[in-house]
Amino acid sequence: RHNYDIVGVITATDKPSGRGLKMRSSPVKNYAVDKGLKVLQPKNLKAPEFLEALKSLRADLQVVVAFRMLPQVVWDMPPLGSINLHASLLPQYRGAAPINWAIMNGETQTGLTTFFIRQEIDTGQMIYREAVSIGEDETAGELHDRLMVKGAELVLKTVDAIASNNYPQVDQPATEALKKAPKLFKEDCRIDWSKTTREVYNHIRGLSPFPGAWTNLEGKQLKIFRAGPEQGRTGMEAGRWITDQRSWLKVATADGAILIHELQLEGKRKMTTEEFLRGYTVPAG
Image (cartoon, rainbow, N blue to C red):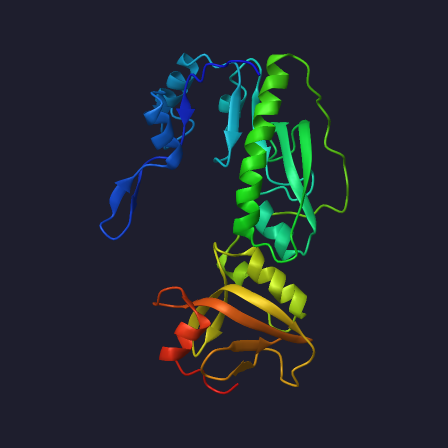
């Protein structure tokens, strides 16, 4: 491995957080400060003072992971360009939420791609790709944590190759069967109980722990974080609640049911089904 000088770290601005709304720094900033690295926290990526500060760093290469869309004046600045790590096997699942959408769509494989940033999002020439299998019951959070570790290794491999001036540059194949991974909005997270058990289960685990799949219970939003699929028709209409009012709670689907393990009712904390049923009577149906 080569030795590199990290000349600067660009990260999000400090944000108010918690009950007291104290200003909190990103973990990236905290780590950079601890290591004595120069930190920039631009609100506006086109602001002249930020561009001057970035230029003064004289970076040969910029490495971008899970950040905002960059204007061309930023990504085109270093002589070796700017590379990005994306959590899918490009060109599939371009967009802001590739981990979520891959699981929601029932994929059994995804991966990681490093590529050079270009104007159109997630379209630049690919450097390395690495396939990763998705577990049958894996949540988005669990997959994210696995990809985070593998992704760090892939970024280092990519930077090493660029430093050696010996790296592949592969155009992304043109394909009409592109699956996209756009930003998730509230309505994307709503559970459609008329779908199959597997489809509903994929939807729930693909949104767990964040932003969370949700449904309505007596006019209140109920988020479901952990659940299990139950095959075999219940004889109930899809969307019906079924419970013993003590220890288990499930909802009928098109071909079975979803057994709920962990949930959160609007205005309440996250809890297990048993905890929830101690203080809440689910109305029949």
